Length: 589
Image (cartoon, rainbow, N blue to C red; front, side, top):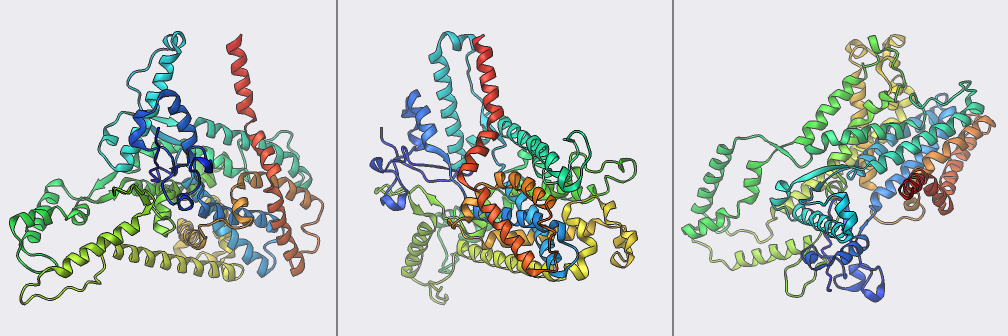
């Protein structure tokens, strides 16, 4: 059977080479000079049941985003450095400024990237039309195979409809699917992390509790606990994605379209000549940008994110009054404070972010007889623009009309230039925030330090420093969190915008193994703190501080070793394997 590739991203997934074998045409399209022998949606129905299972495993593998991997590598290194400097910060200007520059943005950026990568926690899958019962599937195994193949074909039909933008995807009957395996894996890592830290913090901080408390946490495991709660919230907001709240009624949209078509049919926008009725109708069909502007509204995801941000700003008062003893129960203070960053990443998605940053080169299916499918969309747009310019150049000008320049920019090019300008502006503002936090924290911003931890508002203690909380700021503490949202968001955006979208030595590998570094570095840091190695010389000694930073980077590289990754993966999958063995034993019994 003949295979071709589409090279169209579908929710972070791309079609890959069939066998990843150079003898079968494997490798990248640029290396082969042509399409790879992969799976094409249009030829899906020619596959047999056995071929479906084989091709689905081989042709749908997740492609890593190198820009995000590089950003995660930098962020996890900053996490280790920040935890090393935590016991000695607050006394000297240099260490304090550097420490709070890290803490201002490194966890918001990490949480944002976690939201970007949480797209498959809850998905809508096609609902099978007919499914045999369990007894029928046991008596006739080929029925189960046929149903499995039918579900796979329905899934790919849904993906194809979503990618092509057809209306069948919205009317197809779907059911929600929550990724319980990933949630349980995160729960297992949280319990394991909390259990290990219970013993490592005894020599470091002298903890005297008899048993680990899994419901209260204020240390490093809060991040995994917050992920568990955010994952459970995703099904309630998944329906907001892709939906738009119209701003204008349908009747006004139709009137606007009719008026634009009449104006377009009266006079040609480039030649200035009067057009015939047929030409007017043809011009009316080209009003897609104006029609989209008329039909455009406010995305429901934007409305949901604004409501979440308002709830996060008001949630800082939750531990006051009757709930004063809430404390660090389920790490709710940080769950509420960092929720806007997580759902901002979830609503935006990795592909939209990469497209906005200009780090994505889309490839589309070409309809030419040659059959090349690896032609970038930008090249097609340039060719179409060149042909249009050539046609307009040969058009006969009307007497008294002004000649239109052939170098006139297309709307798509103008939109790209505006997008690049916005990215540049936000990046510059983010770099200015780095300079502000890195130079002014110790002198002016230290009274507001608790905001970077996502703490409850009562922990700010405005009554102890009235000069730092003048006027209404002492009662309107949500303004401080709002300013932190803006500053940390700009700093995170600058980091992502400046991060290269290619493989970097060591950095990319570290970014692909952040979870094991995050869990394993804390017990080592506690043992170093208990031994007195971190506080040996003090923050006044610059050489000691630089040595701590170098030790943190070295520890990050060591914990990203491949042998530790295999060990960590085995520990992470241990509950799943035990559950599988237990299930098989029950079935055999």
